[in-house]
Image (cartoon, rainbow, N blue to C red; front, side):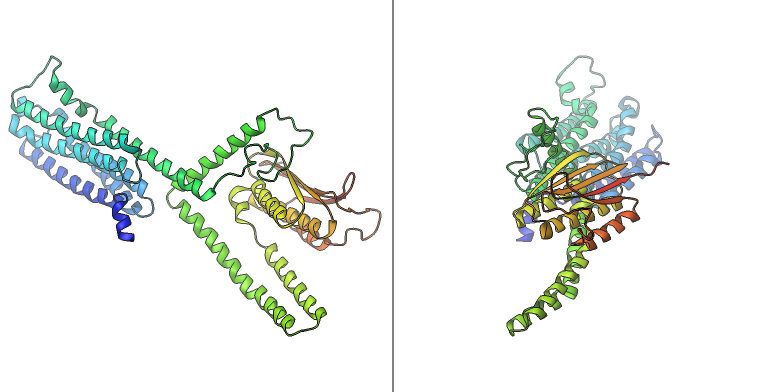
Length: 465
């Protein structure tokens, strides 16, 4: 099944590489032989040969990791190799050389041009990577027209047509010779557009359908969270839809470019897989033994207090383990996307309503700053879920390259700042997060809310030079 699928799919890029290298050898030998047999009309410099060899080396190295790049490099190598006899044929005069000696320049030039265009046509006509029937018609038509042009030119020379001042069918037939370079560019464009379309399709398949509320959500709300716009929002009617569409289009474009970059998609998948494997190993070594022991004690009718202590130990180990873990979405897409992911999980697991207000989303600050802010948000939200008896959580974030401001607020029971030990519950996690934030020059404050609840503030600004 695998072999059959490959046969039905696109022609491997390295097949074009092998053909192009063979053409390069044939044309180089033919051009050299013609130059030795007749006085050379142009010196053969090393630059086209070196460019052709370099392009073929790139194609050979990239043919498995980046087939798209291998195709383009193959076309470029064939073009550079074919430019040697083409340049010789352009200045060769059949009147001075004679028709038969002139063939020593015309045939290699024609072969080089035809094979280069044929490789470009193969790139544009790959069965599962093409822009429909028009791309096939254009590609094959250009190749056939060039073959006719080369044959007509050779026939005209042998027929004694050295000059043709009038516009006749010969001018129409030989037009592709003068338009050889634009024809190659057209075929490369057809293949490249097909590659971009295929990459965009793969990205959309992985992302899945967009949430229903995404088009209606404003720029300051998290997609799919159902959070209404704040009363102080300055966005006019429809501006949220436009901003959301623009952001979605930009994310789609970035994901498509990453998909087309050689090895980028595979590297991302390997990174995610490595992170999951490491996390699974830590869970198996640290958490599962205690959990299994607690299950065994429960099945044996053990002491409930001992079982509770065992489960609390497991919970503590999990907290310690996750404290040093950063979600992949944070490193890949930034703090705002990570907070949206956190909010979605909290809403899915609890009855809390989570609102995200993005005041600014500019360039990303250093990764260490984002990780410190993420840890503070994670601990603050966990404290609300566990201890605050709240119904809503509000995350306000402003991200810039020089500043990051994050506020986590809730409408829970809050605390009285005048009472000693009022925020002791859950304070250890916040203390750890505050120490982590201090190491990167950020400040963390815990304050009572204006009306109710608690407010945790993370603030970082790049020090002035």
